[in-house]
Length: 345
Image: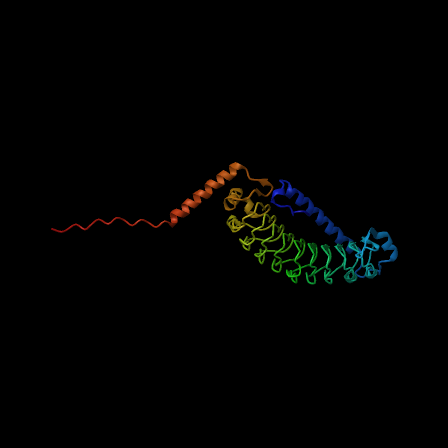
């Protein structure tokens, strides 16, 4: 899914695209789980073999020394693998896809110190923990049985995908080690809190389809541009701060925000241009669209529609009127003129 575009690249049909992607990923996740349910808990041992390696290897490149060549890409999807021990010997691999197998252990990958890209979706992993891999940039562990975010400390990691797992709380993501991480995908987990995502370099955060009731602990994400919170249980918009100065796109579709007054809590987001609140109770209010623009004058798009100039002019009038009323309330009441006392003759 791509919500990573900057403000200039927002398109009117972005939410339609999102919806298609969400549906696609939900179906994909269901397929993974159904596939797993057809087999017993204990798999027949199926180790990675030399023959499988020969079939899956590609992309011949020079090795680090430049004096020899080696295949650096491996794809061994859907092989019912339970063991990838053989990979310990293939130290020049840079791109590895072991998705849709029955793996519970990725430790042989610790020997692949040139690894740039890893896809291990749809396995039986309970952890994404690996030794620090100095060049790893993209890692995907979607649709496994992972319960925590410990042991992820790759200094060049840019994109981390953990959607469709069983994570209740984010812990162990050290901003001092994950200095390049800009995109984190945690959709479809069991998160009850956003605490623990203290990654100042983060630009894109996907937390849809969890158990969140509010936003907390994200105040220091000054580089965050995209925040996706669709299909949670959020009923308050507290937790957003002026420090989130780069946030441009906020998706809160399918939550429980009922009070239009909550929108005032988003007015301190200076770059917020696109807001999605479809399928929240507050959208049923007749003045919902107008109130959003009154509270957030820089908003360009609400849900699937861009604001028209007429709407902007009307919102400006309302805003000005509210400002004048507030100023009048703050003006001190004039003291009555006192007439000089008449002399008694």
